[in-house]
Image (cartoon, rainbow, N blue to C red; front, side, top):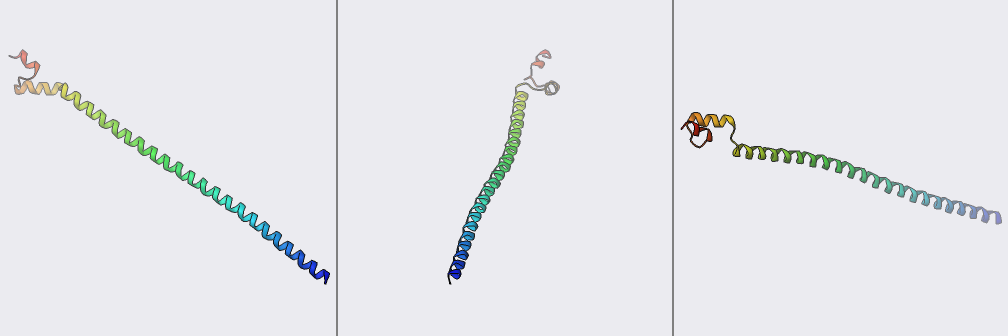
Length: 103
């Protein structure tokens, strides 16, 4: 009978040792899963950040083009082109400075 009790005691120890080992493995796996999930989120954040930077660069390029077009339009308004001045002369427009020579 003593051997039966000690045999069942060993089985209990093995079973509890196995449960303890499984619990530590489960905990380790849960930590690994959490770490991988965080790593995946970081990678997704990096990808999203890269996409946003590309969008920002495209918007900045559009803004620069608009500013350049505005500047060119302002310069054209303040300084009429040579062709416009010649056309004004031909049309007899007295507002151009070159018509002063014809008067």
